[in-house]
Image (cartoon, rainbow, N blue to C red; front, side, top):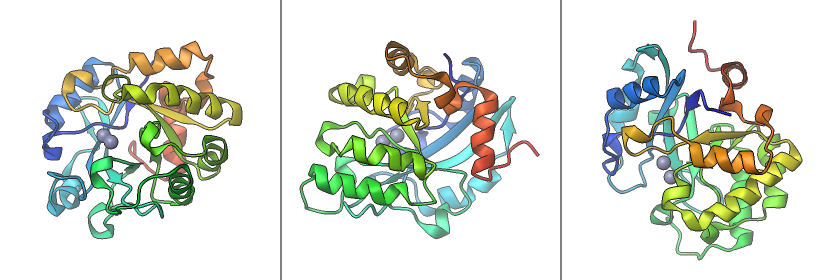
Length: 243
Ligand SMILES: [Zn+2]
Ligand SMILES: [Zn+2]
């Protein structure tokens, strides 16, 4: 199995990532990708891009060097009611919205519990703005996987298998596997992303793909494993890049 789209990548605009749009595009082309989504961080992340960054993404061409481009944002989940830092005025024209929990961007003092994280994700499962559930395997934010994962499927969300977790969130790997097994059990679609913070990572998701392979994960549930499948999801989301 391989990926033809990488839909979670950061640029220097996030200020803790180190490559530009063009460097990421070159890397995507080198890696043989057909699609690339750039998803810099939403406003609650320290050092995240200013409001004009997202507003002006409309100037980005739909295709550069043969790679189709999606504009996006990695929104932060800021509380356990499932509120995300989506800013209507800045983000409404973007193609791709990931929702992720990060310790540094929670605005509540409430300590996470399985119940509160379950509640947050159940709300996000119904949020029509969100396409991807970002790196949700962190042990600190464990939720009731068996209850929530089918709801992700019902809400049309893609559960992210994040290759970067195998490097920077290693304590999450065991949960990622459990989450993937439940996606397999319930027929919930996943997307394999790199969460690249440097261009050489773009398109290289070997560790995530190996884990899926190890558990016999069905390729037809990985939306970015073929151009046809990814196109189909874009159609569902009413995203038209190719016309
Ligand atoms: Zn993240
Ligand atoms: Zn990220």
